[in-house]
Length: 238
Ligand code: MN
Image (cartoon, rainbow, N blue to C red; front, side, top):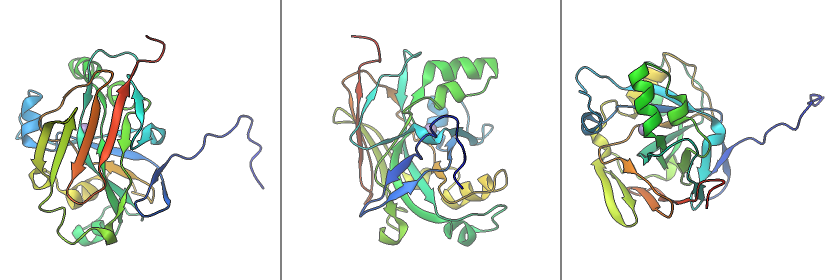
């Protein structure tokens, strides 16, 4: 029997799959500080500052092609182009890359939109990053490519390229990740039981920067469908 909900339940967030279908999103995990040169540009040292995990709410996903309103409460919205992994299975305390690989449904180009001013304030205060990272529409993501459709090793040699208004701003090999994808899944699975429907943003390389209303952003990774979106006016402002 359907629950007697006292308000309308929110629709389940989803991401289109390349070739058809919709991937239902359960949770969004993100990795920070996963490329040496990005850690450096943020004023850190990757040797003493290892990657970290944080989350975004599932309904932060936005489909490719969208116009994303410039978010409230920031003067410094940043782009972070990232490879996103979509999971089809469950697992905790994963032991090796084979166990980790079996969980992967597919992968996609994504962008971890960040209110950099709020993140800087949170870092200074030793406070959580939720306001900086987990805001509405903060997770644009391209259609997900099924892993079976991605040529073997195609991602090993791929570069992640983020452009703003046609200018390349980030261009780095995925192989430059500090924790590679199996290591990310193994690490996450020691903290959480990973489940089908989980998305994982795997971190951004150097070159992050601010966005303004009217900017057009693209994130491309090798053979994956590209992500494009643009920034619109802030809600309630001319
Ligand atoms: Mn990020």
